[in-house]
Amino acid sequence: MIWRLVFFLVKLVALAVVAVLAVSLVRGLLWRGGARLAQKREEREQRDSQGRPLPPSGRGFCDQCGHRFDQVFFMPSGERRCRRCYDDMDRE
Image (cartoon, rainbow, N blue to C red; front, top):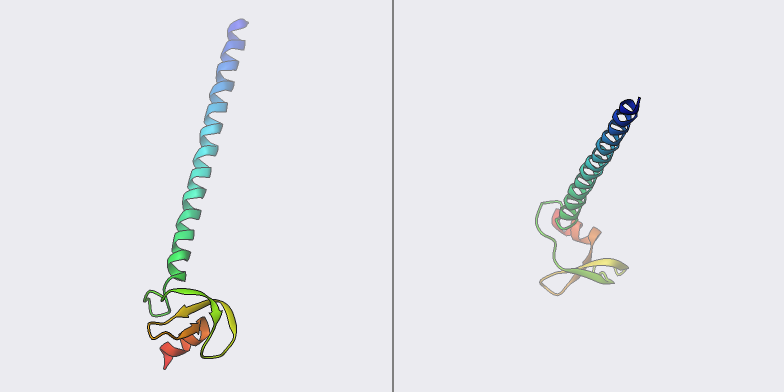
């Protein structure tokens, strides 16, 4: 009778260990996938529609349209352009 109880407890502990490992594995895979998506999003935000790196940016007024934006690109010529005006410049 005591052996059945011991065997049951051993199975219970083994099942708990397997459950903890399974949960850790799933969380690790989800974390990895989320990190990969975040990296891709960050790379996409740092490139323009042509795939070229974007110029340095900051807050300010766009010289083209005159509106204030949280992200204005500082062009090598000294001009400041918002995202829309920067994209329009590429189309011309």
